Length: 218
Image (cartoon, rainbow, N blue to C red; front, side):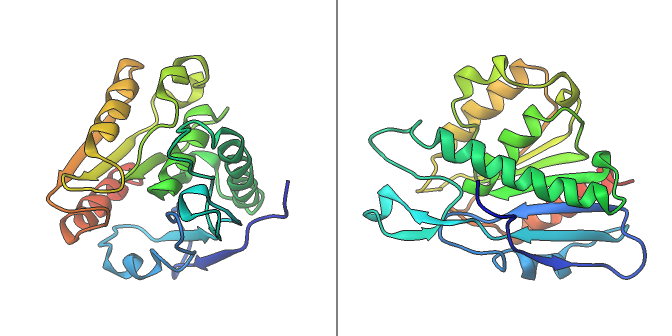
């Protein structure tokens, strides 16, 4: 496994009520969601940690290297399994650093967009300790048919925020709906939102994210 992920961190004024570890999508970097933080109307101060994904060859990108949490091969949808597990373990190291610095595990939220959301869901659903929440934006559950055999008892009451664009050309909304239904069958509490957008984040979604964060950190 490679070294600990490098990160961009936003520390609030005063003591943070929690930490949000927010993972970017394919080909982006740790700065991608940094500008959203000032747009969030938060009731309590939160620390935000934005990790950089490793640089790796990506099959869907003609094998060229780019920041990616896992490889994507259109001909083999489940081929990224080993990469996903390794990336989840690397993000879990960041969780460990937050806990070591004094932030309770139960006050840490995992967030991710697209590929980053896959990692957030993978780690959050399997964790031995409960997270404050899981924010899954324009994403899906990898290999949802095997999910029931891997989820942890501790994660069952973790609040999950899922949002998707109705016109997403990269990850069809049907894939996200199937993932949501798989979670609901396992009794997860999923707050679902859909928007008239593509593979992106919109202002209304940012408002809903802030409301959700305010609820779980109330």
